[in-house]
Length: 273
Image (cartoon, rainbow, N blue to C red):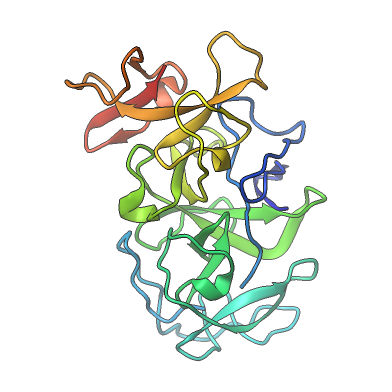
């Protein structure tokens, strides 16, 4: 499995619908970091996403990505319009053109071939490549450029992707059937970062080990007053709403993320606790 990294920190995350443990450098609860349910390839020839993104279409010059130099990752170049330049050998960072699919940015995927040209399948969602870790992505609907780690907790060559701006409470507009994970401080010094990731079947109060276990619109959070490892799925909600977004007996609270809680459309979001 693979995990994201930034500024050299790393955390190994769960594969599809399974949990993984974080390294000693990983953030403490409530943040678990994105998950990585799949490992496969995609290209970039101006395909719009539901997040309003359009992959750059005509680079001034095609810069081929080493070591194979068969095509370019960021910006995408050197492939046919229905192909993606993608990392096809993770240990070495070797790239090649692969046939693209139709799923837009943030939408579910099992492999890069499911994603539209210019997008790669990571964490069960279609993501755009980017050139420089810890920099701001310029593609509309994205946030920061992050790297992906391998099983040895070390950065995988050439695997750098943009996180996706989405609403944790209502992710469907951007992520489709996927979840929107909230990473308030995980990518410090960047804060309030979201990303589309594969979700799971668990609902309010069900146990979980990572966001991949919970339904879209839910977070995997340590149970109140319990050890850090004792987590449950808790629904995202809008603060001070009447009627409440929360089920009977639960109250919308922003105590988990505090000042780093998401604000969507001017409304602060919390969790049903």
